Length: 390
Image (cartoon, rainbow, N blue to C red; front, side, top):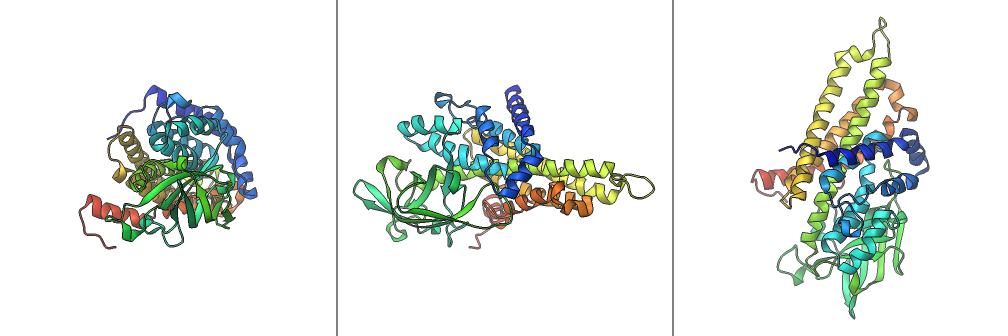
């Protein structure tokens, strides 16, 4: 299944490409070196109407879908941002936009969606814990009843963009495991202020994706108001899956764009660089074949991601497609950046080639936001019908 792109989809992709080209490789190298949020780029994205592409027109969005959002992320990534560009959309139109549009109250939608779309408010999501990564049902951060609201205690880890966000999508237990009949019950989603008494964070030093921070987050008797509950109390697991599947789609789009960018840089160098007998090194099959293999892998990931996004937009199950696309894209982008560096030889190791940043950033997504091993587990059990091993 592959849906040919509509004229509207091509138009938003072209708009995204033009915005991305205004903030090219040198911009991203500087932001990576200073570990700075790409404020100017994100505002340009919002000003061009790209942040709200899949959000309701009632609140200032374009009312399109995940197909168009994936195309936007891919184009921006290929223009220079690389795979970390997907994280900007993951945090904002996904963690903020999809969750509010699907599960928020009318008051929450009217207040926050226009601010998200304009760039006034940024978001993050607090899900992962030190002892609950892929096994999200084991999380222990607990929201205990406190009058008409709750008090939250616990710890989260590897939370992206806390220091630049104003709002946090928080996943917490509202019932203990021994109080529910199904493991998937007893989780709830809340949308709270990042600046709040009892909530603190500490940055984690890391290899790449330096333009967005990763942090430990601590909750000590953090008060949550009734109006900050997102969706159904104790029914947050099913809502969370909707958010996570779209997270996969924008992650894959970022990886596809990063892979295409790496291959472009490698081909440009290989076609110009001459070593033996005045022939360009791009004429050697030893360099051609690895790059051609990566091209095939990246193209396949893009098509599967288009399918996942189209299924989501049609309101159909899309978990398998989103996971498969992410698996192939993460492996493909990791290999594409590695092979591109190899093509450049020593220059591939130099920061001026930009490939080392693309390589560092892409490496994260082989285990985040879901590891390739867990995706393979999912395919084995859900698609092949094999017994669970865990």
